[in-house]
Image (cartoon, rainbow, N blue to C red; front, side, top):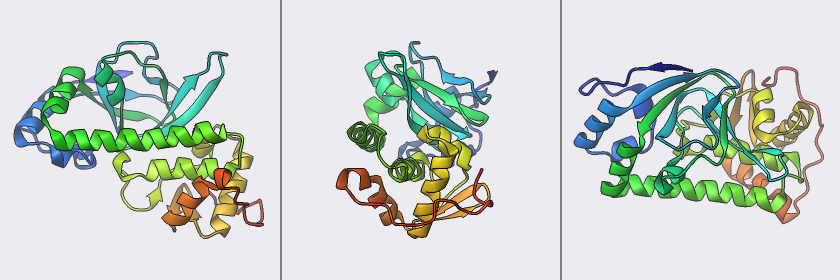
Length: 253
């Protein structure tokens, strides 16, 4: 990891702040303090964004890159439960508990991190109601994600797992802008903990159902409502459409 100095107060608003949904909720005083105390770090693919079991010292955002969250069961089995892309933030629950990291966050691409010190984060949390509303909405979204994963135990249709992963990356709270995700098939496979073949088949069925359009190195979400339906298809008993399993070679990957 390569650390760099924090941003000095008084400089123009950095791009990561403009892409963070919570930034407009801050007052001028809060923005100035945060910019004077924030730090930066570069994490290479395969490296941890934070150390599992270490005391949480920062609220962490991605200025660029892509990462996955992994938990290890009591039997030692690693499980990927979510992903995070540029514009996303994580660690608020751990910081509010003033606890230690109970999961691993691993870089899939090179990640440029934004590090808000714990003291600064808790200062904002204790004084800014709109900031708290943002955190509550984010925690609620992640709770739903983990609840759905627990209900189907990752044993159901690949389409449901892929749809859930795409929708979570596309969530406005994660900094998503528009309906296009710059993500490859191989990266989605890592985030879903599925083989590329199963992800390929899932993309084919979702595309045939009018949910998305595949481009080289990107996925365009065409119908967000349909994507949402596919998230629940394992639980509702909905069958996948009878569509070809293979898709064109120009798909992401």
